[in-house]
Image (spheres, rainbow, N blue to C red):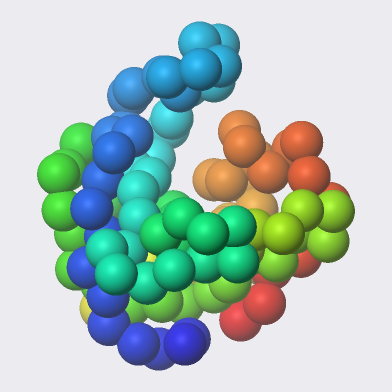
Length: 107
């Protein structure tokens, strides 16, 4: 999957709050890939890095997979074509949500 081009439908744009956990602020765009089913039975979730404004949809490359060791879900990290982030940079940007899980970033 890493290196594949995907389109993310954003349901939690940058600057929004989680619909259930009202104190969880989204400092990045977050959404899902339509038609790709994840292990939790829902469409595959994705973090979008490198886009610094709220968007409705975004097409980019999968640069990493966030594997949650204590959860069934994985999250994909999608970035603009040609953009790169280190594991530490990814970890910092997704900390707002991944702080609650034992996560490993696979690149």
